[in-house]
Length: 306
Length: 253
Image 1 (cartoon, rainbow over the protein chains, first blue to last red):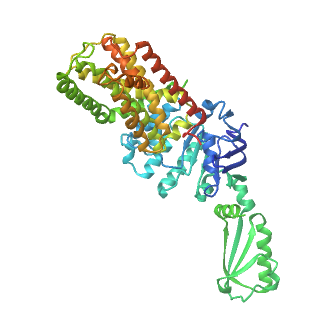
Image 2 (cartoon, rainbow over the protein chains, first blue to last red; image 1 turned 120 degrees about the vertical axis):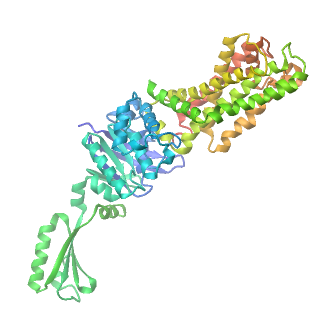
């Protein structure tokens, strides 16, 4: 299957000599939600900006829907919708005019019916005649999404789409993103909220200092790099870890009242059974136990600080 | 060709004119009316004819040209500077529009606005001074050609400027003096010989002279030279704009 976005050996060196992207290779498949994670200044926005035509690449090849973004820029760009990170909106135009402008700019004939559907889907219909300057930050963010969707893009870039929006709006946006994916739109999102990527993404890419250090299916990533933790609340306090357990990844917590066993998600069955058996043999009793899985955030932090 | 894209930019810019009708239309019309009242009616009535044309009528082409140049530059410069300033330029840069289409949209709208304004001022002038237009088609051609040329110039300023101050510097510090010294209020024949020679280096002299010829059939320089000089300036602006888009100067990093 031809990827919707194909990036090969992409490099970007800014005029001052700063290399923002180093030999990026990436493929994004049709209909998936791809989350690009990385710390501030890692190169996420530069990568998106190059694909969308806002920033010039230094070298390499980028294709959208099979079209080269430079040679076939018209075809490539007409497939793409972009919601940038900054709240860059017009101030004096009405919501309707601003969204209609975007549709025309992308070469589509006026279609009031489509604009109406987009505005209704984003709960902007009641605000259609309001000037954008009179809207709240969250509403302006919705306007930007409406503008990006006005020309019915096949590929949608969301650069930090929920930055600074309230929880309710964030949930609404997640719902909208899922619906878009169901309709066949490929979605690439960058986010600081790892919870967002964990909630929505099919695949995760991690970028650090201009290099893609990992691209993996989310579930596989969580299994492969995720850790599980078993916490046992003991009946009797332990002064130290018994000798029989020193080879296990265990530690004492809560002043000796809690035993924590950390293990790879993939090895859970064997490790937990062995630990509980050993505790039974040693006569160490516990009154409660909980397991906890490491979040994508913990995996991400571990990756970018390696 | 992305005709919908051109139309979108053009209508978006024209809508700005509608929203700011006081600033875009009324303000320059009132300013020009004041010139007609002061220089045309009050002072003009005490001055002799120039080339057998009453002073009030003589200054009309120059005053229209003054507004035309200032408004063309200002409209186009603001048109492209505002999206750069607000950050909404990302949308134009990421859209499937060619450089030419972007320029046609922005410059076309700016030139339309200033052409309309020029015509409004001409109509308004009729309330103050009697005048005739000997070559109406040439007059209209000069009006449109000058609007387009200086809108392109304004577009360049709007790309070059990195602050509101710079947007004003060129029109106020360069264009206004050139217009005032370019024969708006006098014929350059009235100047000492050395200043006549110096005036010929002022490109606005050719614009006003050609425009005045279209009204009264008299000019400081031959009308062919006026047309040629305007086209040369147009060609220079087109060259700079195409360089801007080719290199991404101040638009794409």
